Picture 1 (cartoon, one colour):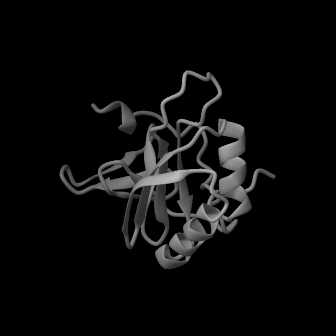
Picture 2 (tube, rainbow, N blue to C red; picture 1 turned 180 degrees about the horizontal axis):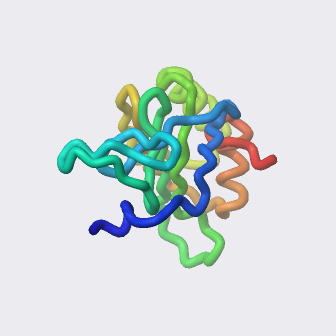
Picture 3 (spheres, rainbow, N blue to C red; picture 1 turned 90 degrees about the horizontal axis):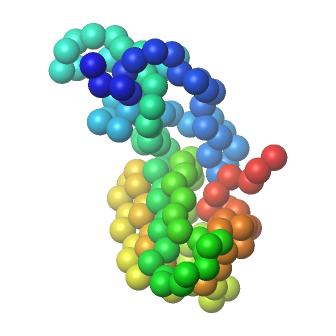
Length: 142
């Protein structure tokens, strides 16, 4: 059995996306998770989910990665998040963030339910995630 289908969830609470609203969680292979369980259409079984998950419809799954080349130990590397904003609104906020000139976009790919941004920056993890939060691109820590 796949490790992601054994045992109860360690933390069954839904993620709070950048808008502060609850978000739908999905298994990595695309099944919605409800009350810690999902319907595996291949085996036609209801399984308990543990392990990795992702955001998905109606939420937008977001991934930021830095390809900047520095040896600093605190350099921003990557972050994944879930946003309940519409993808167009999210991209407008990305544009507003870029006006701060704290990073350069190497690649940006977007679909209705996913945004992947590859940047080059010398900012630390703390500074880059604060920049994302300041522009509503990551949930605030509260």
